Image 1 (cartoon, rainbow, N blue to C red):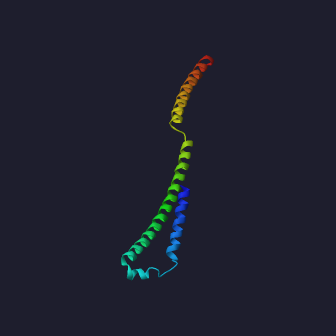
Image 2: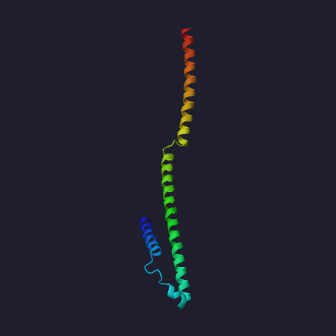
Length: 118
């Protein structure tokens, strides 16, 4: 995926440089008069190249955003994995029930102890 991204960036850069710095600025001028269909096709190609460059840059930006969101997702997933689950809540309820039972038993034993000593 990274290799494809780098290839696309290189292609975009090369096409951008070609469009911004053409070797022969007037190389299509003669075609305009002698072969208008070909001149029109060349203009369409240049327009499509510009659109391709813009879309490629847009894709690269969205790919970066997706990678960032995936990183955040993994980070949040790891945080959630460390949080206690429903099993801990059930265990806590069992312990609270046991504590309540033991407290009642202890109160009963204290009353009995006071009766014997009282």
